[in-house]
Length: 72
Image 1 (cartoon, rainbow, N blue to C red):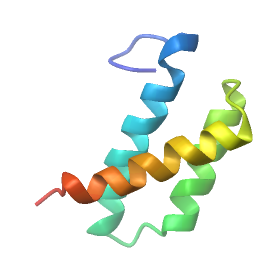
Image 2 (image 1 turned 60 degrees about the vertical axis):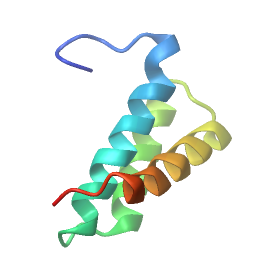
Image 3 (image 1 turned 135 degrees about the vertical axis):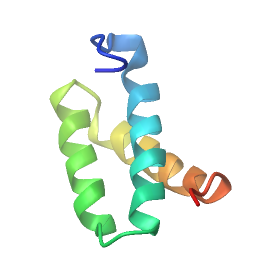
């Protein structure tokens, strides 16, 4: 879901990337464990039909991108 709307096939990767960025930002300033966040994101990605390889690449990319946009 994004803004209360269902994410369609073309938006799954973008939604996953955004979730990885945002959760990565939160994890950097909290007790959220990286492996827990990545595992939950992977499960969600697989549930909506992304391949394991695509899920890993997208989550890794989002996790790295959080460093460029840290939350204060």
